[in-house]
Image (cartoon, rainbow, N blue to C red; front, side):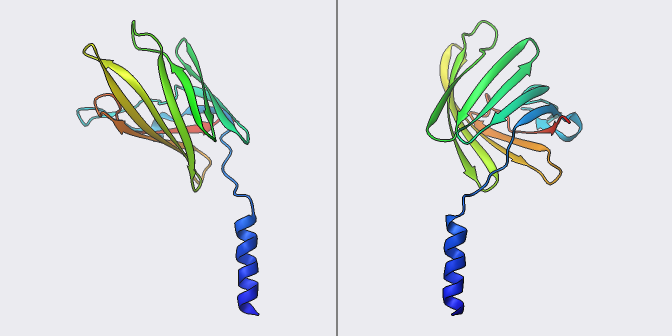
Length: 163
């Protein structure tokens, strides 16, 4: 009888829809909790998604509206399939197409992105991995890694939800 009860409980748990954190809201960069090591090993404070951004999440996608200085960038990440977004190029470079795929690893949203960057007149493939999760206090932690290291500095940025 105990075996049957355990099997029934396991089946119910497997059938229950998995819930994931909702990143919706307005977020502001927490300078005191964020650190990004620069190429020379020094600690550099850098907001990966700007000083403030808005997030809207539904069952099919996460939309980020990022405010970085005079720029407003909207990035849409589909939970199924690929997403294509335009990122402003540096200086006189044209916009960069970024292709991304997202997946959930437990309560963390993982965004894998591919693009190209112009380095010394040559296009170089760039791959990034961003992991987004909420900590126990409800702050948003974003950890970024990628290649090549000359184009993607590993970082950890912390954002607080505006009340």
